[in-house]
Length: 306
Ligand code: ADP
Ligand code: MG
Image 1: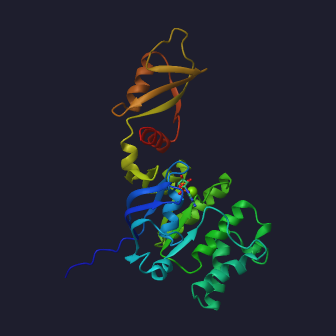
Image 2 (image 1 turned 60 degrees about the vertical axis):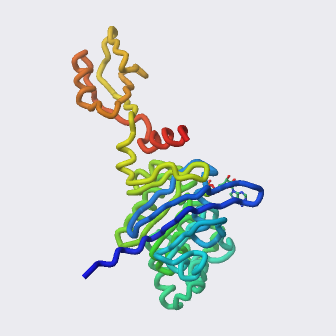
Image 3 (image 1 turned 90 degrees about the vertical axis):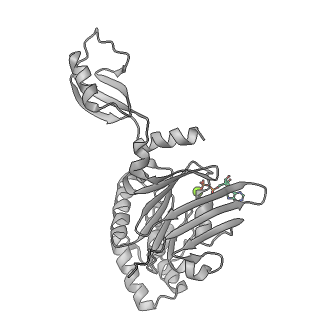
C-alpha cells in the first residue's frame, strides 16, 4: 500500500506581481511551506512580503504564477483556498467602534461557523490571549499589543489550518512579544501551520524552523534556519574578561572597553581555541556573547550582496 504524500500547506510557483505604475514587486518567486512548519518570510522594507501574503490570502490578484493552499488554487478556487487560512494583516483593519467579541463573532459568521460554536471559540481564544475582560469593549480602547492579539483571535476563530501573520510583533513590547511567541508555538504544536513575515530577526531565529529571505521581489535564500545559520562564514563575538595586562597585543583581538574584547570567529575557529589563546597571555574569559543576532549577520551578508 502506498502512502499518499502530504499535501503542501502552501505552494507558490513562479509568482509575479507588477503594480500599476510599473513596480515589479515580485519577480517570479517559488516557495513551498510544509504542513506543521513555522515559516518566516524575512526581508527589508519593500521586499515584497506583504504583496506575497496578500496574494496567498486572495486579497490581491497576481500578474502571473500559481499559489495553492492545501492543493487549492487561490485563483481557480478562492473560496476553498480561503477556508484554510486565517490572516493577521500588517495594518489594523477592524471597525474601531465595534466591541471586540463582536468583531471576532462577525468573522466567524462570515466563514459560516454556527453561532454557539463561535461564541465558545471566541471566549476560548480571548482567554488564551488575555482579552477576556475586553469582550464588550470597543476595539478603539485597546492598546496596540491588544489590538494585535484581537486580530489573532479573529484570524483563528474559524479554526483554519494555516495562520499567516504580517509583521505580528511590530510595535509590540518585549514581554508581550514573548507571550505571543509562546501562544503561537502552542498552536503550532496542536497542528497549526504558521507563516509570518518579520523584520525582527530575533523573532525569526527563535520561532521559525524554516525561513526564506526575500529582497527586491526575489527569494535569495531559503531553508532550515539552522542550516542557513551554519553557512555564516564568520561571527563577531564579545568576550568579557578579567583584567587585561597593559602589554597585551594580539591583532586577532580588539579591546573595545575595559576588560572587553571583540574577536571574529571564522567557520573553523572554536571557542576553546580562543579562550586558550587568551589564557596563554594571562587573560581569563568570564563571559561571552555574539555581537549581533546570528540571523542578522546572515541577513546582512546575503541582502548586501544581492
Ligand atoms: P514589504 O511588505 O516587504 O515591505 P510590499 O509587498 O509592501 O513590501 O511592497 C513591495 C513593493 O511594491 C514596494 O516597492 C512597494 O512600494 C510596492 N507596492 C506595494 N503596494 C503597492 C501598491 N498598492 N501600488 C504600487 N506599488 C506598491
Ligand atoms: Mg509589509
